[in-house]
Length: 144
Length: 141
Image 1 (cartoon, rainbow over the protein chains, first blue to last red):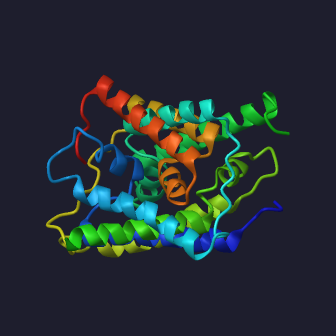
Image 2: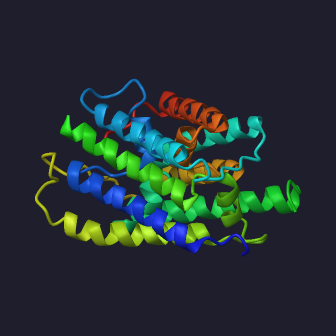
């Protein structure tokens, strides 16, 4: 547990919760990122795209501003080889489409609404992600 | 315009939250998922903190007849726990466990200047299109 960072985790989590609360209070929308991306992609419904693109632009700008303000704001380590990144991206896109949500839509917004559907989805993707990491690291020995 | 500016602001907050919490860092995410290794529980606190914040706010917000800038709330109508939900979530978990990227974190990592995240995101968009091709256009929730 040498890399445990409780304070930044609590602060960042509160910001994510605050963002989702504001989006609901102001626009009546659920901050599910996979859904926001999915329905921002063509073909889409008329009048349902603008707010999504602005949200996604903010999602890009927030980290960009932080990086310009402090180049050491984040340490993003990506050890996954690029062919695996592509396979993972395909799975995440297809899976969140089929399952109607991801970590934000089910894991944060759905659980906060006490939705049994989101609780089931979150339990499944957490368990499968944990098992995947276990197999990759401890069986296939990608890392010790 | 005010609607778009408000969602832009929400997106910025969300992106800042992802970077500050380090949810944007796949090494950190995978260390959280690796319970049998050098387990890093930080991301459990990210979720708990986000859940408590939104959970409390949700109860107050939902009492209103409508949101401030729109006529009505757009809440998910589906309640069924079916094979489609569980299969989709399992496939998402597999991709998340392989890469350490979820959709929001990948977009935020692009904003932070990581091109690998762009590669992941492009593949993710292809995945969404494949899903639509096979299952037809998604309903708006």
